[in-house]
Image (cartoon, rainbow, N blue to C red; front, side):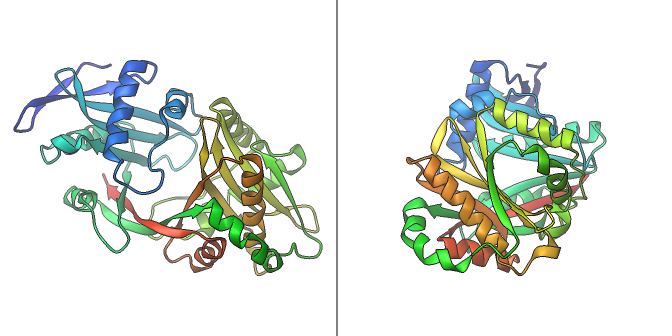
Length: 342
């Protein structure tokens, strides 16, 4: 841990410290704060300890993560996270803040966020992002907290959850709705893209930020070389995360679309959709639905114990929302994508 900085927020003095993710006791205390702070949310808002214990200390070629703790004596009462991208969008920093429910409204969250902003500015970042989760049609303290600290809502998304039992009940009725178009074929793989398609896959990934609805989020186009893809894949393998991917190949052999479902070795009960994208040149053929059926079928067959899958989509993304509703997803939360100019 770094030398603490004391802050007086009324009831007690708290220290804001950087947490060494290789210190298991400190990391567990940090994880416990976030776990407790998100316990009231639906779905699976917080990873299991066994996954965090491995993933948080791992070297990530895509970003650097700094963990912060708010310490009162020997007890951690708040947890923060600063995320600095390292491959692209180098003007951005991500933020997350969690506070013990009994210690809220003491300025602890503000203290953590202030330290995150210092870190972001120190690395030349000019835009800070964050998230707030609300009940559908409602509000939550995180929304007022973000507004009071200068964040704007850049995009609204729906967090959706699929009960695997519901998916299996309707799977047969979906079979005729998404046949693979003539000349196309769908392949699947676990995490590591076949060598023959990695260049074309990188071209498709580079389209992501220009093709999905971003609202006012200050995200810029990225480039995905084969080397970058391989590094990202190896990180997933090293932390025990399986990215079950379906890839649509066009008649000329290029990658026309892709979708994935992610499952951790330490939690085979819950899964999460990663990306779904179809090249604009190949839209209108129901490839999105066909790809999602392929990934969900693969996940269900691979993990008999799987109970639920979650995903998120911009509220304005009517096409993908329609696809997800057809699969059986239901909205459980509203996600506000937040943004603040530093």
